[in-house]
Image (cartoon, helix red, strand yellow):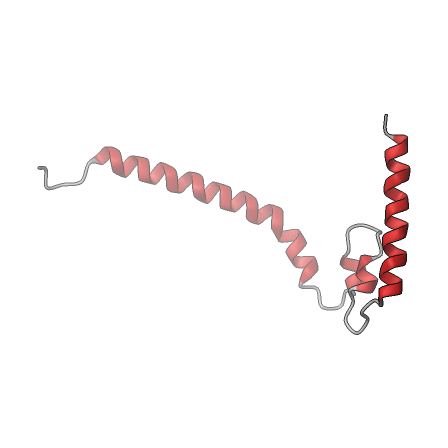
Length: 89
Protein backbone atom coordinates (compact mmCIF):
# COMPACT_ATOMS: atom_id res chain seq x y z
CA UNK A 1 0.00 0.00 0.00
CA UNK A 2 1.01 3.53 -0.61
CA UNK A 3 1.76 5.68 2.40
CA UNK A 4 0.62 8.98 0.91
CA UNK A 5 -2.86 10.11 0.03
CA UNK A 6 -3.90 10.14 -3.59
CA UNK A 7 -3.90 13.49 -5.30
CA UNK A 8 -7.04 12.60 -7.28
CA UNK A 9 -9.04 12.15 -4.08
CA UNK A 10 -7.81 15.46 -2.76
CA UNK A 11 -8.84 17.23 -5.98
CA UNK A 12 -12.30 15.65 -5.86
CA UNK A 13 -12.70 16.73 -2.24
CA UNK A 14 -11.74 20.32 -3.05
CA UNK A 15 -14.15 20.43 -6.00
CA UNK A 16 -17.01 19.05 -3.89
CA UNK A 17 -16.30 21.57 -1.13
CA UNK A 18 -16.27 24.41 -3.67
CA UNK A 19 -19.65 23.31 -5.05
CA UNK A 20 -21.15 23.08 -1.56
CA UNK A 21 -19.81 26.52 -0.62
CA UNK A 22 -21.22 27.97 -3.84
CA UNK A 23 -24.67 26.51 -3.13
CA UNK A 24 -24.59 27.77 0.46
CA UNK A 25 -23.59 31.26 -0.70
CA UNK A 26 -26.47 31.33 -3.20
CA UNK A 27 -28.96 30.19 -0.57
CA UNK A 28 -27.61 32.74 1.91
CA UNK A 29 -27.90 35.62 -0.57
CA UNK A 30 -31.47 34.59 -1.43
CA UNK A 31 -32.42 34.32 2.24
CA UNK A 32 -30.65 37.41 3.60
CA UNK A 33 -33.23 40.07 2.53
CA UNK A 34 -36.07 38.09 4.10
CA UNK A 35 -34.07 37.50 7.26
CA UNK A 36 -33.45 41.23 7.61
CA UNK A 37 -37.18 41.96 7.47
CA UNK A 38 -37.87 39.31 10.10
CA UNK A 39 -35.28 40.72 12.49
CA UNK A 40 -36.74 44.21 12.08
CA UNK A 41 -38.25 44.63 15.55
CA UNK A 42 -40.21 47.76 14.67
CA UNK A 43 -42.31 45.94 12.06
CA UNK A 44 -45.60 44.41 13.14
CA UNK A 45 -46.47 40.82 12.20
CA UNK A 46 -49.04 42.11 9.70
CA UNK A 47 -46.31 44.06 7.88
CA UNK A 48 -44.12 40.96 7.59
CA UNK A 49 -46.88 38.88 6.02
CA UNK A 50 -46.38 38.39 2.29
CA UNK A 51 -49.97 37.66 1.29
CA UNK A 52 -53.14 39.52 2.18
CA UNK A 53 -54.94 36.51 3.60
CA UNK A 54 -55.31 38.04 7.04
CA UNK A 55 -53.73 35.15 8.88
CA UNK A 56 -51.25 37.51 10.55
CA UNK A 57 -54.04 39.21 12.46
CA UNK A 58 -55.35 36.02 14.05
CA UNK A 59 -51.86 34.73 14.82
CA UNK A 60 -50.63 37.92 16.44
CA UNK A 61 -49.65 37.67 20.11
CA UNK A 62 -52.48 38.19 22.55
CA UNK A 63 -55.26 37.26 20.14
CA UNK A 64 -56.29 33.68 19.63
CA UNK A 65 -59.31 33.08 17.42
CA UNK A 66 -62.40 31.46 18.86
CA UNK A 67 -64.09 28.48 17.26
CA UNK A 68 -66.76 30.71 15.67
CA UNK A 69 -64.13 32.97 14.07
CA UNK A 70 -62.21 29.95 12.78
CA UNK A 71 -65.38 28.47 11.28
CA UNK A 72 -66.18 31.75 9.53
CA UNK A 73 -62.66 32.02 8.16
CA UNK A 74 -62.79 28.42 6.97
CA UNK A 75 -66.15 28.99 5.31
CA UNK A 76 -64.82 32.07 3.49
CA UNK A 77 -61.78 30.14 2.33
CA UNK A 78 -63.93 27.22 1.22
CA UNK A 79 -66.08 29.59 -0.84
CA UNK A 80 -62.99 31.14 -2.44
CA UNK A 81 -61.70 27.69 -3.36
CA UNK A 82 -65.05 26.71 -4.87
CA UNK A 83 -65.15 29.90 -6.97
CA UNK A 84 -61.60 29.28 -8.17
CA UNK A 85 -62.45 25.67 -9.05
CA UNK A 86 -65.48 26.82 -11.07
CA UNK A 87 -63.37 29.30 -13.02
CA UNK A 88 -60.77 26.66 -13.86
CA UNK A 89 -61.50 24.73 -17.05
